[in-house]
Length: 504
Image 1 (cartoon, helix red, strand yellow):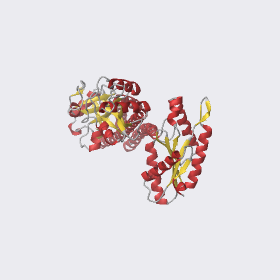
Image 2 (cartoon, rainbow, N blue to C red):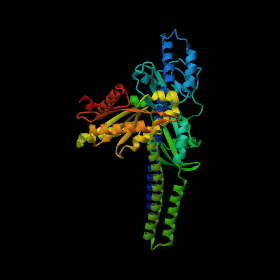
Image 3 (tube, rainbow, N blue to C red):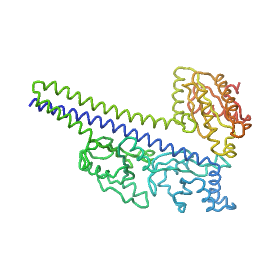
């Protein structure tokens, strides 16, 4: 009986360790999904911003706004002509004025469904999120479109979106697990024109928005037959037996834009991630049989045999956990690097820049050491794109990124603030030194960046310098640097302007 007791104890302990390892993997998979989700939304917003800043799109949207409102009734372009030119300018993409995937449909009001577009049109602030649509649910980035003639006047909104299918296919390959996105039927029935045909009839009352494997229905069926595990989307990882073998299933809630904005208690659906646990269960069974053989064959040494058997089993399991966790951490690091870096210029993204700026601001207040913020902008960048094309504009941006990174210290923060505007956070120096740094950067850009084939055409920048002042918030600091940049441009461009030095 004592031998049976030890075998049972070892089995329970090993299974508990296995469940803990699978739970950790599930949490890592959830974090990986969330990082990939956020990265996809950021990509949609960046693409929407790029298209919305096109002078052609701004001009066409302004013409469309005037024509539709009646102000532009004397325009030589008809609404159909504007829509056709806009279609050619932004394809692929989608706006409330024009749907690229279905250009024949336009003019219907979707204010009660497309909250991202409604909110952007209301206050002119860009947004991103997951939102249900008339045709499909999508990961969308929406940005305002401003008049080309009057940059302060918003004339519409531009949306770029993608579906979950591409996201979960790449994610499934990266983490070695199957992924599915489920949306509650109640939410879908109020949104889409035609309900999808592949709805799952189950206790979760949901249908498959996207899945990387057709084994999903089998997994859902097993979950339904385990009432103690109900409800779905509670964030747990479970080890379940299916017809295809044992699987580890992780499921968690998914909220859409309107749910996050209005803090809805009920999610729009959930994400299910499952992977085979066959090898883990074989290892568990193998270790159990080893313990039984030790107990039968070596009665006298049963205590020692069970001890080393347990240590061996735990060692193998821990090695597997370390290996799998390391792979997931590497993937998370790569995804985080993608989110924190601007791909074209190599400098940090705006989100990373603003986060580091707040950290540095807190450190300045706490330790009372100086810090300087540089705001710089390429002079006449639009004319570079117009004369020599966007490829030349991209090369100029990339060269500027290289020069800024080469001229900065490893603890300086160089970030892309937006478009052709960049910021450099320089800790530990006052505004006089910051002015000197900015002047060196200005001269280097003017001397090193040339338009290919036009060596006489130099690229110049204007820079605003603002040192930290007592009582500054992060917004105040950036506003001061931006005001100094504006002063440099107003004074003729290709120069450096400092907020306090200019005042003195």
